[in-house]
Image (cartoon, rainbow, N blue to C red; front, top):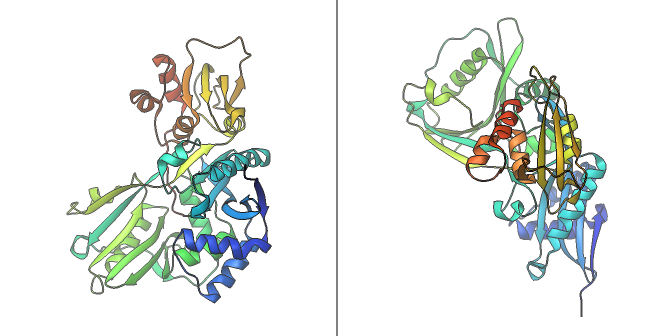
Length: 397
């Protein structure tokens, strides 16, 4: 007998069964106080929560957080997929697939043109159109390898003020990267405070202007830097000098930085441990709407390119398009008619399209590994108009 499957939205009434599955699937146990805080967050956080029921039995779940991300310095509405879990007896029955397809439809309807997620397996989510969009660089630095302490103008002050001051610094820094989150007051309260415990200090220049901050924790002779945010080289040097002041307390420090970080070049001994860690995935939810918001590089003239895009799980993106990029950098993506398929079209899937436009991969790189096919001249013209920006995400969900 065929099983009856329903995909429903969850509300606070579903908290207990959702939390039971989460604790099992992600292998953690919360105290009574932690559960109460999680329930408060569950009720208040702007999120669409999905549940799959099989014969009226709760079987799987996922959530889409209503977020924004910086791309090209602009804010894009983004659906953050999180908490995907299935009870073992219901796995490999396509339940998560049904939730993902339903969530994509609803993200499109809400104007969330892009979606991010942290994958348990990259290959699994690639099947549904998500692709790697950012990686982190993790340094492990022995105390004797730390940057040399230097005198600096201004001063370091322990944080005791408004989150707005931190957020202003964060946004000035994060908006330079593609794929960093726009943080709300709620995010600072429930996410940053919990995931990044410890001390917070700010750097002020000689005029009293805040130009950077550090969130860090010292434990078991290790200093873990949770965030190092700076708006000038002077601020960066001052904060690293402050870190080095802890040398008598620690054996090493760990810090995760953007992939374009240049610290090793600035060290007297650059032979520190460096790890490159693929981190989050992204997928464009609505190609036409995304392009309408996206800023290409300005140039002396308008160009037109034919794009053949494939997207199995968001069929509204499937098809042949005319990409028209104005001299200003504004662009439109409009579907060709059925009889207008172009032989010289640039062909790619939604994952490669996403990685290319967010800036993780360049068109010619994708062409080299066979992820874009088509006229090489057209691919080069496209590359010239896509801005080069490093991708970075200093958050988790």
